[in-house]
Image (tube, rainbow, N blue to C red; front, side):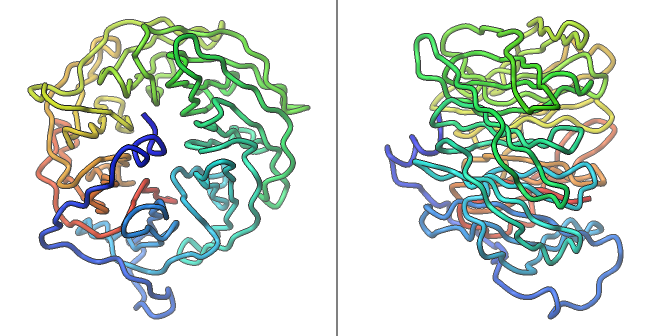
Length: 380
């Protein structure tokens, strides 16, 4: 279920925030020089919420304490619901999740605290929810949720988004197609698209000369599964598919030679939370490949999955409150010692300390107010 559909059905509720820190505008020049361990963090948000989000905030990540503090807001970037970096990490690309027609924006982040907008291009569809840069750095892949389409843009040498080279539309069986994610597999040979409405995962071959997609395979899932996002395991042979409508994670075996997914074990993400609506949104895997974390919107928890040595047989270890409402996104810190959660409806980013040995999360802390927050990203 998309946020476009949600906001048509109900007013957004904002949680009473307790003791939180307001992320207010400032300038990078006004802040004292910090130690090298303090990095930038980028916070994308929706501008249609009440109160409205800023679109794109720049914060300072204090790695020793885990705190996020304000640096500035960046004008000219609206509804940055997803971000990805170029292979050099000097260019950042964001969706502008708008309807009826969305867009994608390129930013120069050579100075991480002073991004500069390079250009914006139409995504050739409505509600772009996800984008990713092809590993060769020459193409940008975008998923348009409203139109159920995948679009390819050529990237220019200076990082700007160039002309579109292809667009493919998915076709649903019982519901309209709603493309929600597009990424490249670890081998770099295949483009994978997850479609929530079509209950399917598509595999494409990308012609890196002309930038055209050719459908290779389609993995059909049970009707009503609602797959939203998948995360590849570092071993390159497994992926974990998060289902928004079924509140499950499906283990997929991945054969990069044939470009084929084979579904295996299915896990519930809710644990003891069985009542009320729940719509999982994001799944991430620790860099050592031993744990996965999934957000539960509705239960407002993080599900911790233990992967261990047997990557095809994970276990649900715990569910932990996020300290906010409607966790749309989560991201592990560069040090892997904290999980940051973008709680969209409460308009807060919370930090959950993480034990890298057991994978367990401690209670959420250090809330920061970011109205309509959709994503947290670290440039390094």
